[in-house]
Length: 116
Image 1 (cartoon, rainbow, N blue to C red):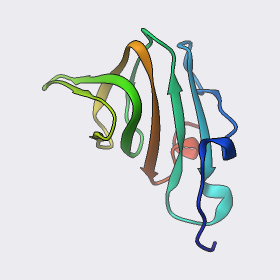
Image 2 (image 1 turned 180 degrees about the vertical axis):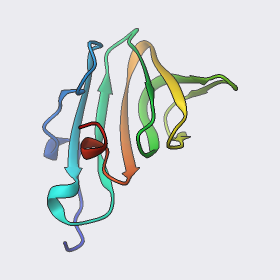
Image 3 (image 1 turned 90 degrees about the vertical axis):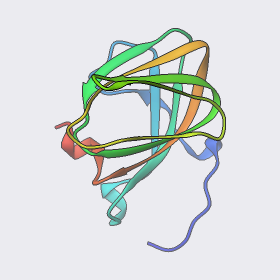
Image 4 (image 1 turned 45 degrees about the vertical axis):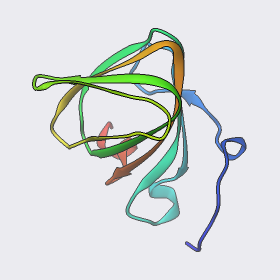
């Protein structure tokens, strides 16, 4: 795979697998492209929540809006320009605030095969 630049227009946002919340994700690079990581965008509608045990290491960059991420150790809130790291094996609850949120993410390894 060679160097590429992506924008939100490049992502086909689809419902997040296995979630009932109004959360959409769109991978731009994943296992189908031969690299070791997945990168993409996510959109959280207002007031959404999901809880899961991380199957991969996940870095989430908040581009718009605000999210809170909770674990048994506490809660962090992140807004535009802030990054949340969620290590593999950690159980997290991600909540979007009243304005919802738009994020970019990087996972290692690929998250989709890890959820299969």
